[in-house]
Image (cartoon, rainbow, N blue to C red):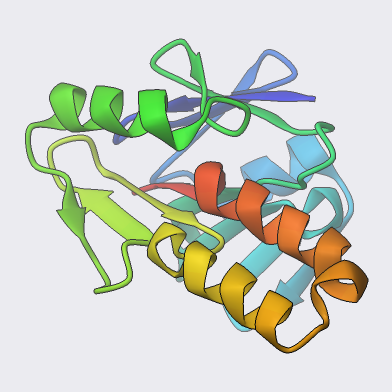
Length: 162
């Protein structure tokens, strides 16, 4: 499934736009089944989240399912499959104001573009994580988890439009 993301505007899914400022009923009509927690509406098995205030959509978040089922396109780039080494510099150039939201380098935002995005694991901690697993003799049994963390450090885990 492909979701197109538009800065400060909303998304297009299955050819239908769901815009920021719309009533959540529009998303329910288009997407169907959902789960609700407080003012958050989760669709597509939790991979698509609409944050609302008084039933009006204020943020839309798409989560990387890491299985390739979900394709999120922003500015003609597949933000979930493109690696950090090419996507991050491009987003920085596009926005002119990308700022780090945390000291580990996982979460970023741009007011100019009305986006926020995060990586699932801090790239700066990978080497130490792997070294410690090897030193503790658990690398082989943790190898599958380590490979997932390597992927998560290099690919966006969540992309938010606001």
